[in-house]
Length: 395
Ligand code: SF4
Image (cartoon, rainbow, N blue to C red; front, side, top):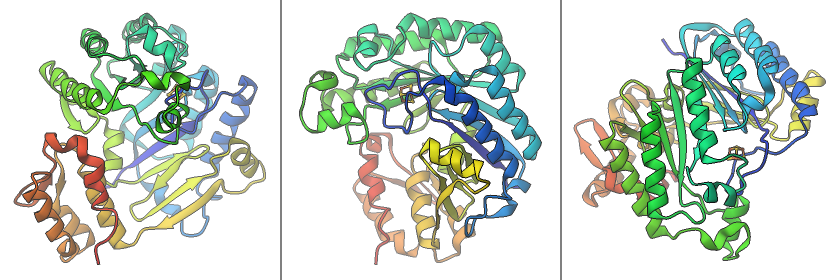
């Protein structure tokens, strides 16, 4: 039977990191209660207020087996507000027997009391944005914490009782060197989180630092961002290092000890249904994608007025769904099972892709064995270009 993932967006942070391309912002904490109340109202009102055209009312019949609170920095809301959201979730959703419940946090935004409170309310996975264990690099991107704060947060989380911790690291931060990157990985291995996400700095228009790198400027320490060669070497080194420490790479950016893969994130790559709540949250029911108002005030105003906060909804054609099947599924180390596509979209749904699969295979960018296809690790750094091949439906 199909199950449901819940994503809750909390778009507030204590400071805005220069590299951040998420829709999070620094707000006075006076807004936190109103926002948490709005999320609770959205949960309670769903699906009554949701049916912007085409949004299915029966999604909540599915049992919830993953909850992910991300952002932003959800722990800024504090125990009481988080508990309110948690109660609303338990009241409004069909709760499965075993729920993976993740909350994202940053060092400095969760003390030991909050960690205990989170465990009590059912959170069982803590995702910590460490990013780097070098204080100079942390300062350069505007983080408010030190490397030792990250170490201390992991220690406190263990002491509180968390048995599933994920650490985020970034390769390519300003001033990062091979040595500092390696030290960060060694420190990570010492802390022994169950899960590690290793991202490459994205130099694009969506962040202050990215924009500055693109225009060749020097603000936000953009001139100290290491080049593409560093990025590629760091990623390959990170993959090997984490592998040697027992972390299996199960997705382009994600590594886990056995049994600790993120069940919630796997839903995204396998086109499983999830419901997003909160400002800017995205949802997917298998055929439709929709998203809420990204502007926090507009999101809250819609709910205050008793209206749906959904502001866009797209019904995917069968062909678009098959494209997503490839460019999301191929992110996973296990790749895609072509039989799954045939069962879901019909026996002929792959015909138009056979040439593309054969071409990528000839170029050594894809491995196909029987009904399974996956990217070889040497192609991971080219994955964005490979996925582009699956975006435009061939004529
Ligand atoms: S803490 Fe995370 S979400 Fe917040 S600004 Fe930094 S990177 Fe973005």
